[in-house]
Image 1 (cartoon, rainbow, N blue to C red):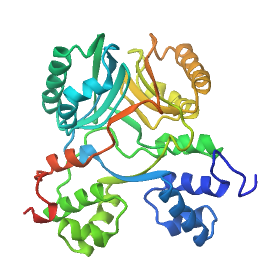
Image 2: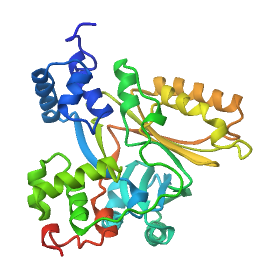
Image 3: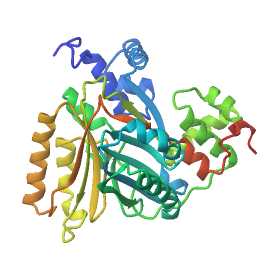
Amino acid sequence: MSDEEPIYDLSQNEARVLHSLVKWPDETDQAIHSQIGMKKSTFSSIKTRLKEQGYYERYYIPNFPKIGFELFMVMFGQLNRFTSIEERMRIAGDTIKSFVEDFLVVSESNKAFNLSVSENYTEYAKNSEKFFKLYSENKFLSKEGMNIQAFPFQLSRIYSFLDYESLLAKLFGFQSEPYENRMVIQPGPIKRVKLTKAERKVLVGLIQYPDETDTLIADEVGVSRNTVANAKRKFLKKKICFPRVVPNLDKLGYKMLVFNYRKFNPKISLENRSDAIEKVRDLLAPHFYVSKNLDGFMVSAHKDFESYNSAYDELMKYYMRNEYILEEPVTYQISIPDMVIIKPINFLPMILKILDFDPDIPIADQN
């Protein structure tokens, strides 16, 4: 294939640059263009163009258990189809947006899911009780209602957290990395790290201004540029936070977002079904992929129903043949063009709360 043959409206070189940014989000531009054998000027101009055209966004994600969070929570289910998103948001929108633990809330007509990270179950329950009371009073829930599942970081394997490397590799025909090589949030007991006040400010600055220079972050949070640079090196080395480059699915031609929750055969442990991990990556390439012994969920993107259905059927046959699952998973297919992102990806409010910063006062002014 020539360097300029288009792939889904991107040239081969543009596809290489986008995939490399997603694959190595913590590397410098020099390291990346050397790795893929591209001239610095070519890489830089393509990267700038992709950013300006909205093909990707950059995030810094806190390594949640290292700064005091215990639970990854997911809520999913069906809503009353005789109520509209507009009506639900008019009545409940402000309440939902006030839940700082929720970092992504997605809805489409009568189905929805949200992803949350919580310090403990008590903190999460405060929000969920308000949610169910409000939605029940206004008859927004279907008969089936919403389902809540907890995934304690200590007990869960987070194979993919906002990681689109396998998705883009599959799209562009590149070799993708095994999930085991890309896991950042590790299971098991994790000791909470101690951060100085300046380091806590820098962590907030990175999450709030992921694309900005050390100098700008230093000005915004009220520390020196050297403090930002030193803290960033420490954070990356000790995996206190990690960067992610998130592609624009709509611009890449993806039409479906699929949420899938499944219960596993309790006779077969997580370790004994490890062969299924790469099967999931090869077939569905989910950008959220979380499992523990008894259950798990994933969120994946797909070009169309036909390609998704074929891959999903193959995976289900594999699961059933090996007796990994005993019943059909819960699956919600959501149209990307039609979905409403009630809360877009945002980790800042929960970080301000757990680091004990006042969200109404500029970080630079807080002692």
